[in-house]
Image 1: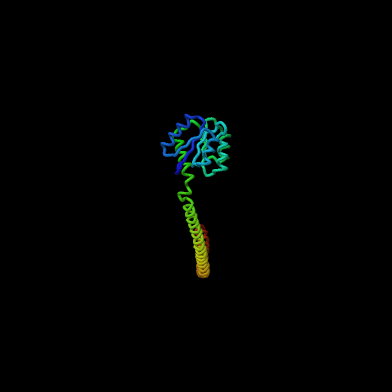
Image 2: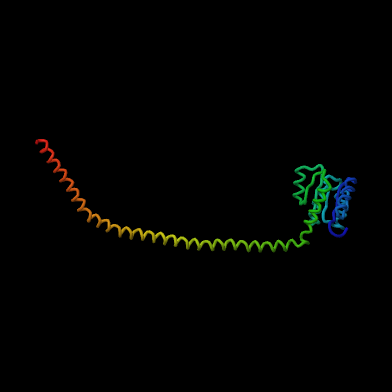
Length: 223
């Protein structure tokens, strides 16, 4: 097989291999099949593929053993484990060994085709130039961060300028209050000195008037 989208489907049941061969071929993949892990390895040594989809339970060599070989010899190949007898332990083992995906049967043709497509595209990411794009993104992020720091640095002097202005205003207000008190105090004292005799004479006349009235009333009563 040559070109991209090369897929190998490994299953010991002939009917399953034929069905998935037809489904994936109709989706545009170059498909090759194998009856077990050992046969798949023999073929992969001479004709590597982009993605291997394999059943778990197979004679001679099962899917997990095939996955171990692929990870050691052809780690660039994406591996998808497809089984109807799996469990959490099998899934964990497959993912620990580096499986791209773990799928439980039954599965729809659309779902399998979508997963295989994703696996192929992931393998081809370096060819699409994603690496340089990531390198271009990082400097852009670094450029944004100093801008934020500069905004904080610029804000600090403004706050420092505002604080002395407020303090100066408070000092000026306090000065006017003290000056007002110094001017008002003598005026209040002078007013007290000027009006104190008037108040004293008024009180004296008030007292004399009361005394005269008291003296006149008894004389009238005796007459």
